[in-house]
Image (cartoon, rainbow, N blue to C red):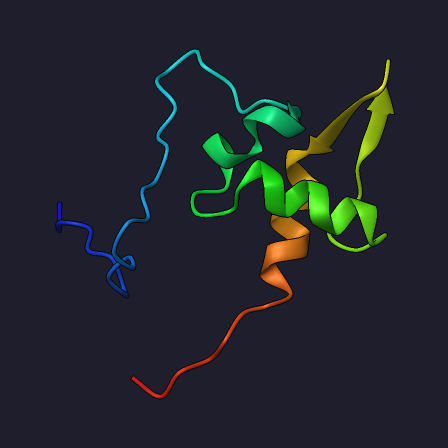
Amino acid sequence: MPRKHLVDKLPKGVRVIDYAPGEFKPLFVSSKDVEKVVIGWSKKTAANLRSQKKGPRYYLVGGTPYYRIEDLEEYFSRYLVKTTD
C-alpha cells in the first residue's frame, strides 16, 4: 500500500488533532476553550469579534458563548488563500 503524504506542509505552529478510534469530534466548544480547537486564535480575539457582531456564529447558554465546530470550520474556510505552489 502506498504511503500517504501531505499535499502541502502545515504552517509552523499548526497541529492536527487526531481522534483515536472510539473518540468523536465535539459538536460545540466554549469560548474559553476555543483556542484549543483553533490554534492561533485566542479567546480574546473571539470576544472582541463577538462584541463587534463579527466572526463565526455562536450560541449563548447560561451567559457562556459556545461555538459549533462546524461553524468555526465554515468561518475559517472563507479565508482560504490560493497559492501558485
